[in-house]
Length: 125
Image (cartoon, rainbow, N blue to C red; front, top):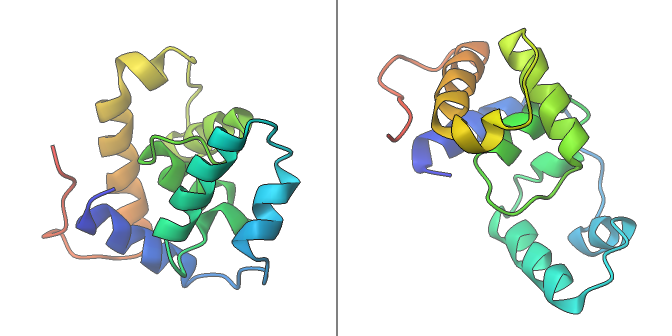
C-alpha cells in the first residue's frame, strides 16, 4: 500500500470507532495452525500501527485495505463481498489475479471520493 492509498485508508478509519482488540487477540481468533503463517500475519498487523482496518465493521473499508495487502488478513469471502459492494457489480474470483491493478484503481477512486480527498491523490501505477 503506497502513501496515497494509506491516506485514503486512514481517512476511512476516522469515520468509525474501531473495537479495542489487540493484534494478538485478533490473530488468535484466526485459528492459524502453522507458526510461520502466524508470524507473517503478526508482522503485517504490526506494520499498520493504529490503522487496524481488519477490525472495521465496514466491509468496504476492510476490502479496500485488503485489496492492497498481499497477505490475506480477512476472509476471502469478505474481500470479494466488499469489493463487489464498492464497485456495485459481481466480481469473479479470477479477477483478483488477472485484473488486480484495475480493481485497485477502481476501488481507490471510489473510496477516495467517499472521504472527499482532493484529486491530487492518485493511485500508484
